[in-house]
Image (cartoon, rainbow, N blue to C red; front, side, top):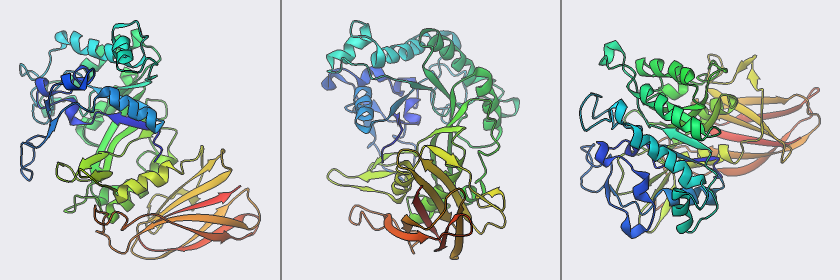
Length: 442
């Protein structure tokens, strides 16, 4: 997949059911045999899963996560506790023992400072030595740090507790920026993509001058089909966006299957088109055990011996492996191709890759009918060979499984672009419910 960024250790496990069960990165480093067992935040949340079956041994800890990032060749993005336990389970921020009072945050802020030292500090520093003793004297060159997962503030109509999260974030920002001014800090707009909590937090992220803020949205099919222009109107003068968790979480079909993956591809054309504001995006969750899940739109599934990649994984791979270096304008009737009225369920984006000299066009047909597609490559002349990659299934609820891991996978092909009238022209009949990539050498 060649990801650009890897977010860890996860989402709500960062917060924990309470402070005692929050993820504490210092417990996840050092000799593996000395790391304590921790209860997972999702241990007993859902009635459809038996428990106890959801613990963390910390055998895979922050040191190993940093090593994974090196293996992946990507940036590490750890997320730390801001002193708030899971607010879904603990909505009252004044409850003792569940959330840390503002005046008692010093230890949590020190944990954040120590984490940066563990990742980047010299071997003669306290936490740099821990890293070196584990076999990695070179720094990990950490550049990003997320503070809090799905935290939020309250307005008068929803509890009246005020800026519960942002007051804590201010303290973390002040300490981290004072000691590590080049570190990019990431805030959050809570668990929703819109609504009172999102509307409250989004402007506060700009006020706090975070570098990025983390948006999460698990939404149904209709949301993905109707929000193709989500990022086109975002404020370009504020912080950049990190789409840290998202998936099409189907109505009544809450698992990885072809239709929801197709709509994720449609949504990602909007992310790509707005790469100037959406700097990072990570589909989540990434890994899930087939007998240990609490959430089913996951990218990679495994048992103790085998693994398979979901259709959603292949969507992510197709974008990541064909992301290019520069966004190109692509319009239909002078409008972005984003499932708008009159666009027949089409979504599209285009990039240029200066390293390969290729123009790469991604088109998603979400409609139930085959669509004639015509792509005029202005500034390019003459007939060209076109490479295509197609993701399609006739079974909308079709999925990959351990026993049939490649039921739905991308298929390579080719076509020819004609000389056209003054510009190279690709014409194609794009089947219903299909994601296709066109690659043309400039």
